[in-house]
Image (cartoon, rainbow, N blue to C red; front, side):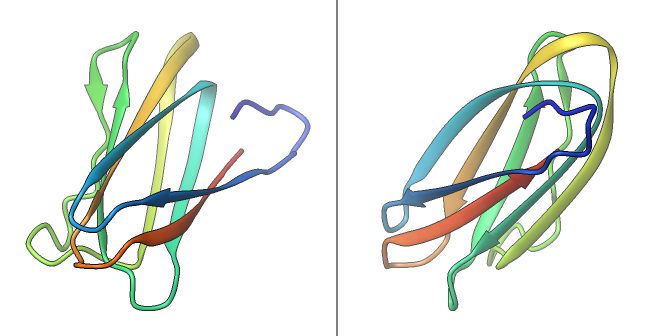
Amino acid sequence: GTSTSGTVFMKTCCVKAEDTVKYRFKAQEKQELALVTEPGGLVNLKVYDSRNDIWHNDDDGLNTGKPVHIRVFDIPEGTTDVVIEVINKTDKDLSFVVISN
């Protein structure tokens, strides 16, 4: 999400066992993004700034996934579509929360 007023946006999402989902949202300026899974959840996170063709992936835990991901990055200029890709590394369906500014 985009906020110059300090507002925080939060969305609860889900991903099937051993599957991948993608979400897209508008962003500008400094982007602060967090993803938190339900207890026992392990996911990988890929983040793509589509207008500027820049990846902001969290490469920690690539083989096993992690329950929490935090990414902070700057959008060079203007507004862009940010695409997040969440890869479930477990054999159960998971819910997770995406938090952004």
